[in-house]
Image: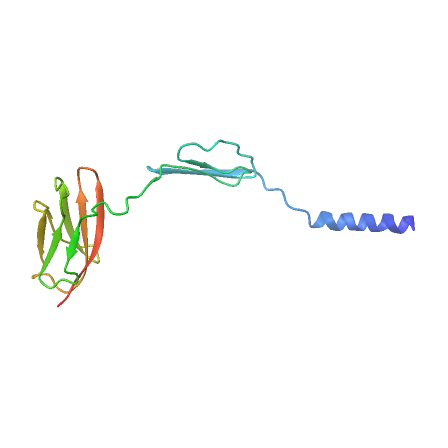
Length: 158
């Protein structure tokens, strides 16, 4: 009986040896761009505290260091009203009592072609669409003073 148990133990241990995990040697790489850096390793322990805008994972899985956007402004022009949309001939931009210093607009076709741009100088400005063909356009409104911008989809009807 002891021989039988010993034989089963040897056979079982040989079987486990065949299916054992392979050793992965430590590997790493770094990808660096002008705005971010990504580093990763496999097989090594990485123990670093996460601080600021650095994200670190331990156990050799992944380490990411990047300069990232930490907040988004939902609507940088809360008083802006754009009407009518769809537009036939004239599109109105009404800013309310917002300081208009440094605010401009740029109109692009949906495929990114520049159509026109201008500074916003009055509380109500107009964009003439009479010579623009029907389609979908993107209106970018930019405040160059505080670097805020927003995009709006404009539809030109017949």
